[in-house]
Image (cartoon, rainbow, N blue to C red; front, side, top):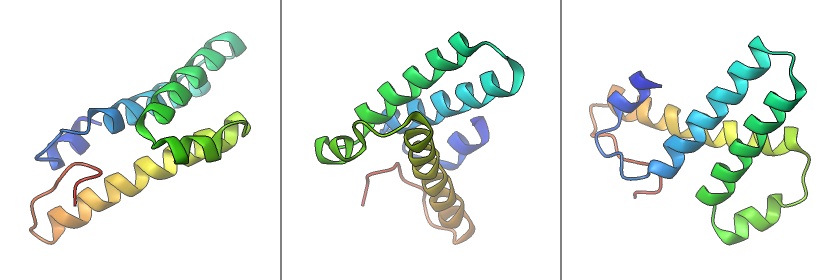
Length: 101
């Protein structure tokens, strides 16, 4: 994640970095723990951060969806952000934070 942040010149969208961090923590917990309680806590954290990042309309569209669906949506959002940063760096353009136009 530190390498990703190096690609971003403007880190003004801290909420997306929080989502990425929560997704990474959930992945690590799943990979290294059999504790259902620990996994559930990390999933709760990811959902809270992801819903805080989304618009009200986007969050309403995900409300009530299963955890695996919400986690997938969060990870896809983060992957798109990272891919966009990488493309801008390769093209020699300045990288900007998510949500910036």
